[in-house]
Amino acid sequence: MAVRIQPLLLRNMSREEVVETVNGFLAEEFEVEVEALDPNGVLHETLDLDSLDYVDLVVVIESHFGFKVTGEDFKSISTLNDFYDFIVNKHEHA
Amino acid sequence: MRVVITGYGVYSCIGKNVGEVTNSLREGKSGIGLDLARREFGYRSCLTGIVTEPDLKADLPRRARLGMSEEAKYAYVSTKEALNMAGISQEYLDANRAGILFGNDSTAGAVVEAVDTIRAKKDTMLVGSGSIFQSMNSTVNMNLATIFKLRGINFTISAACASGSHAIGVGYHLIKSGLEDMIICGGAQEVNMYAFGSFDGLGVFSTREEDPAKSSRPFDQGRDGLVTSGGAATVVIESLESAQRRGATILGEVTGYGFSSNGDHISNPDTAGQVDSISRALKMAEVKPEQIDYVNAHATSTPKGDMFEAQAIFDVFGGKTPVSSTKSMTGHECWMAGASEIVYSMIMMKNGFIAPNINFENPDEVSRNLNIIAESKNAELNMIASNSFGFGGTNSTLIIKKYE
Image 1 (cartoon, rainbow over the protein chains, first blue to last red):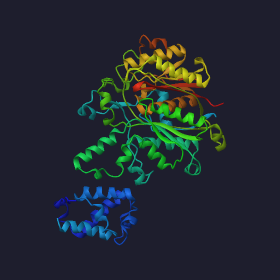
Image 2 (image 1 turned 30 degrees about the vertical axis):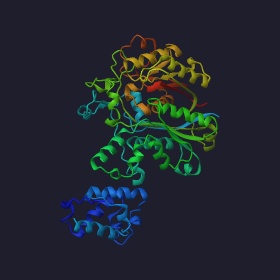
Image 3 (image 1 turned 120 degrees about the vertical axis):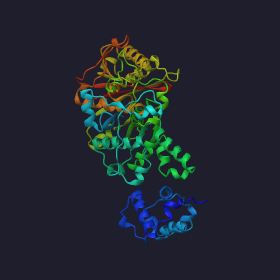
C-alpha cells in the first residue's frame, strides 16, 4: 500500500523526538505509564495488545504521522525499538 | 413461577441516579432544555432533554470503553446502580447465570461518526476497532454482557418507543417459564442530534422553545408536540426463589405483560390496539381495572397520540384511576421509556407518592374524563400499570405489584 507521509510532521524530527511523540500517544491511547515503555520490551506485551488493538495502533499512527502501517509492516516489528525504527525509517524515506 | 424486581437504576435528564430522580419526580422538575446546535443542523425544534455523557475512565479499562456507544455508557451507569441495589456483586455473576435483555432501536450517533470518518479518510480501518461495537443495534447488550460477564439470555429488543417495556415483558416470561433465574432488563436511548433528525422532520416535536420546562405537556389542551430525551434505565428481575435464596430485598413483583399490534397505520395510534394491550396485561395479572392504583401513561404530548391513549385508558379504567405521564418532566425517552417509566413507577411505589403530570393546565375533550394528577401527591400504590406504544403499532403494558 502506498504510504502517505505528512513530511512536515516527520521531516524535522530527530529520533529522540519521534520516540517522545510515539511514547506520548501510546501512553495516552493504550493507558500505560510512559515509564513502562521499555525500548527493548516486546510491543504487544508492553501495550497488552490483542488482535483488535492493532487496528487502533494503525489509527493513532495515521492520525499523528499521516501514514498507514500495514499488517505486513507489523511482521518486522517486535520491540518498541523496532517500532521507533520503523517510524524513523519512514521519515528518512519521506 | 413468580417474578420479582430486586434492583433498578436510572440515568436520565431528571437525574443521574435513583436519588436525584426521586427528588425530581416528587418536585415535578423538568429536565428539558435547548440544544441550539440543532438549529444550524436543520431541526425545526431545539428542545431536548439535557443529558450529559458519563466519563467512565475511572470505572472501566480502555478495551471495555472503546466499543461503548453513548447509549451503552448510559446503560452501564444505570445497570451498575441496579445491580448494586439488588446486592449482586461481580463475584455473584461470575458464579451464577444471569441474562440481559435491553430495548434499543438506534445507534445513529456511532453510525454517522463512522461513516463521516470513512468518507474523509477513504479507509475503513481508520474508524478504529471500537466503531463496529458502537454501531450495531445490540450495542448495549454486547457491551454490558461482556463487562459484567453474563452467561444467560443475551439479545436486544427493538420495538420503537415500546422497546424498553417489551424487554421487561419478555424477560418476565422467560423467568416465569423457568428458562432463566435472573435477567437484567432495561432500555437505552441516545440523545445526540443525529438520533432524532428524521423524527423532527415529521413535524411532531414541540416548538415551544421560549419556555422549555413547559414544552412537554401531555394531555393538556395546549400541547403542541413531543420533546425527545434519553439515557438508560435498568430493572433487575428474577424468580422469587432466586431472590429468596440470595436473601435479596424484594421491591416489587411483575404480574402482567400485555401486548398487541394495531395492524394498521405506521405512525397513527389506535385505541382498540391499546385497549387490547392493557386488557391482556390485566387478565394475565388476574386483576380488575379498579385494583390498579396508578397508570403511568405513554402520553408523549402529541395532539393526536394523547387523545387516543386518554380514550383507551378511559375505556378500560373509567375516570377514577389516577393517571400521569412522567414524560411531562423527562420528555419522550423513546427506546428507553418503557423501562425508565417502570423505574419511575417503582420509585413512586416505594416512596408513596404519584409524580405529577406537570403542565396539565387545561384538559381537552377526552382528557377531561380522566383523573390526571397534575401536582405531586402522596398515595399508597399497591399496583401500577405502565403503557408504552410505538411506531408500527406495537403496544406493551406492564403491571407491577407491591411484593407481599
